[in-house]
Image 1 (cartoon, rainbow, N blue to C red):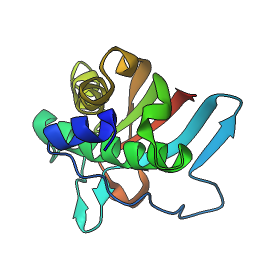
Image 2: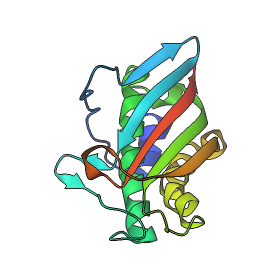
Image 3: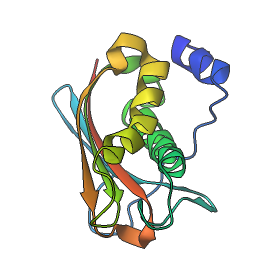
Image 4: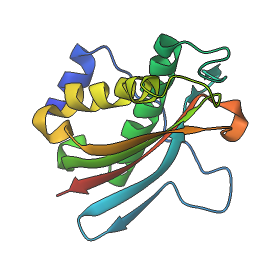
Length: 155
């Protein structure tokens, strides 16, 4: 086991299998030493966190949704790195969408996406610190609560 696999085990994280795209796109694109990962939703196998923040979803439930998206992002990273997450040099940027009502507390949107950001820092340390955006969306595919994409640098 490499250092990232050991860290995942210490954190109690089992990565899902990288999911196939559901439309006409690819899960990631490599360009030079950057990997652009398509949006990953808050669904793994039969576990889905859906709904709208401000209506039927609390900040804590939203953070769980963001954690599911983070696990899916990690699975895509692993696939892009030919199974070796030690190739990840930096999480460059995350882009987070939170399905929410128009009157949801705007300060809660970044708190939800912290569920993903926290995982990236826990797994990769300083290399997991990233730029990001976190925005509200009136609806997301499959009624999921969160969708997050990423740009990473690899060796």
